[in-house]
Amino acid sequence: MTDIVIIDYGMGNLRSVTRGLEHAGADVTISSDPALMSRADAVVLPGVGAFQDAMKNRWTRPHMCAQDHEADRQHQRNAAAF
Image 1 (cartoon, helix red, strand yellow):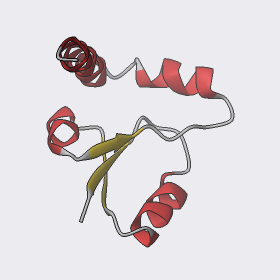
Image 2: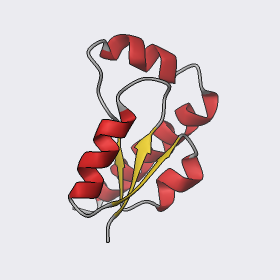
Image 3: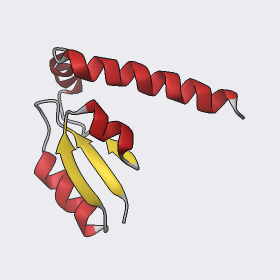
């Protein structure tokens, strides 16, 4: 079973996304914990109609900003391997 973390950044219809992923067979956790995100098979950032407002809200949570920077570094390392 695929372990997926849905990022809880204070906005979005998290329950709807959760139900859809569970229906597809995923094991879903809703969290803003960077440690859980780094161990997951996949991470989902659910969209909202006012995504700019959602991103502003997300950046008010410093621990989530650090996770984004680490994900960028990991992506760059993976891209360099190809």
